[in-house]
Amino acid sequence: QKEVEQNSGPLSVPEGAIASLNCTYSDRGSQSFFWYRQYSGKSPELIMFIYSNGDKEDGRFTAQLNKASQYVSLLIRDSQPSDSATYLCAVNTGFQKLVFGTGTRLLVSP
Amino acid sequence: DGGITQSPKYLFRKEGQNVTLSCEQNLNHDAMYWYRQDPGQGLRLIYYSQIVNDFQKGDIAEGYSVSREKKESFPLTVTSAQKNPTAFYLCASDPDKLNQPQHFGDGTRLSIL
Image 1 (cartoon, helix red, strand yellow):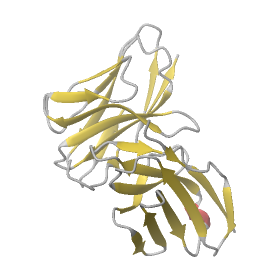
Image 2 (cartoon, chains in turn orange, brown):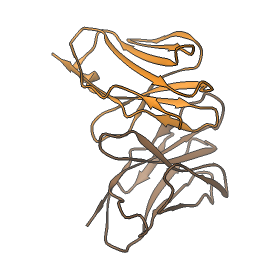
Image 3 (cartoon, helix red, strand yellow):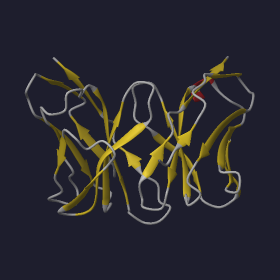
């Protein structure tokens, strides 16, 4: 069974702080990794994707991938109340099928 | 504007009734997917299609059926055999190329009357 694990949270951070969201996966053959943001009652929205070891930055967001340890993380700098949402980690295991984690709920307090 | 359109936004099903959820995309994507999301759970794959007139079962296909007669369209039928259909249904598509992300429609919320 290919699994993607996330802490369900909620992860509470004050406005302006760095939020760190983590995801581990079980399939060593996984090739690409995606972070989606989902507001309550809405559909998932792509934030970032990464497929090489290391860091990838896009504005306030940084995705980090460590294939040896089988984890991927998302850092959100200067967190804003509008970042409050559930963040879904998804892993492509090589057949263009994504396996999703259950998501981490992030709460950013003003 | 390119995108994925799902309709209706809300749908109610009576006992013993089949209902069909629509998904249309104008992104020229080859692959299309249907997911189901229950409260507090991640997305679970129902069916997917990588080419017209071909589709594959996902992890929870029982009680559902699909067709892919056109590249742009991938409708999902929730049959009366699906005993617990209440959920948020999401359609997605991607170019079916390595490492390319899936993009989602706005979803259909299905409830039992």
